[in-house]
Image 1 (cartoon, rainbow, N blue to C red):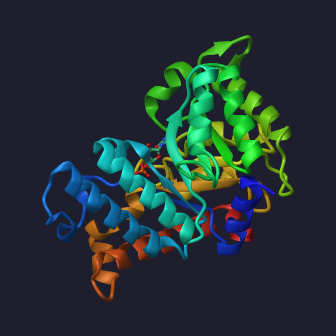
Image 2: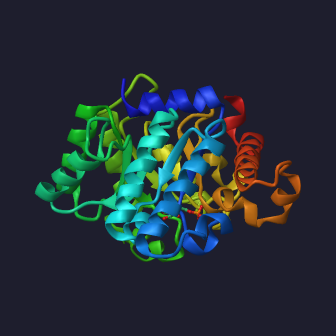
Length: 302
Ligand SMILES: O=c1ccn([C@@H]2O[C@H](COP(=O)(O)O)[C@@H](O)[C@H]2O)c(=O)[nH]1
């Protein structure tokens, strides 16, 4: 039993396909968390406190957490220490951690990334990691090997949510687009690493902002977990992500970062939160996202 089964269990237990993205941005933190000063160490301490508050608030609603490495890395060593604490806290709360680091390099270097980030015994302790496929199949192999050895998972960038991604991902060679070609390779890696739930250790990132391609890739990749970003702040809707799910409600998890974690900046949530505390707004936004996804997608069958 590996990451794929763990994710299926989390989705079924919570009856939720929601992944909450932890993307702390200094200017958007609650006022009280910014009072300690704005040097790198103080910002990192505030990111840590904020992220732990988010984890506590969303734990009942989220199937997994996706910390975005970039925001911690921006703060240098203090930020990376905070990231380590955030990963440990999410795991202590029983939430699978998908590290959004988009790593990769030539195979021998990829191996070091894989060893460092993947699995409960690793230095970072991530349950899964996002990786780029653009250095070729030999660059993915070390990740697959380490992930399968350690019961961890991967999400390979297949069709990203940003508009510019189409420039290369939609290019056609040998009668298929690059994203189709990467998708077919990811499907073969998933089939070779199947868990009991019927999905493999190797998943795919497919953006909510491309519903047609999402439906097409679901057909092409029946054994692949989809991590779907772009829902909420980037304009993707629950209806847009519906085709990413299998009929039983499994097969896809949907990320929302800003739409959930900065909910205290939206008057609808400030008015609703009984205590007025920012974490209550975050909890309410996570619950709303789950209800929205259950209403408009096969996740409602969970
Ligand atoms: O194609 C991709 C791949 C990754 N992301 C990441 O997901 C979140 C989205 O944040 P929102 O605030 O919900 O827009 C962010 O960390 C991105 O780096 C993506 O958006 N698209």
